[in-house]
Length: 64
Image 1 (cartoon, helix red, strand yellow):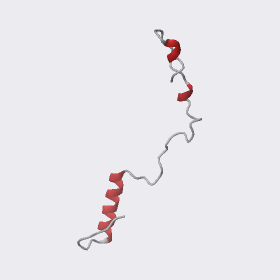
Image 2: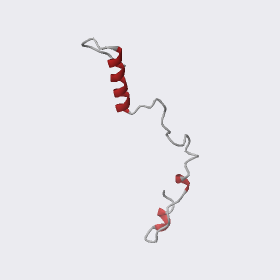
Image 3: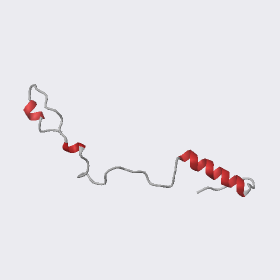
Image 4: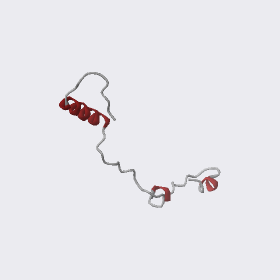
């Protein structure tokens, strides 16, 4: 919402101000792609980290 509190701008000036503010905010009017909608789609969580040798490696292999 835009409100002019002082002065008497012309419709062209208000349109120019609105265009500048819209360009500065980066709003294209379209929602951004937020990625997968479900955790079932995220394949990164299904991939395990490589096992590393060392003390307690067997225990840490179950942790993500």
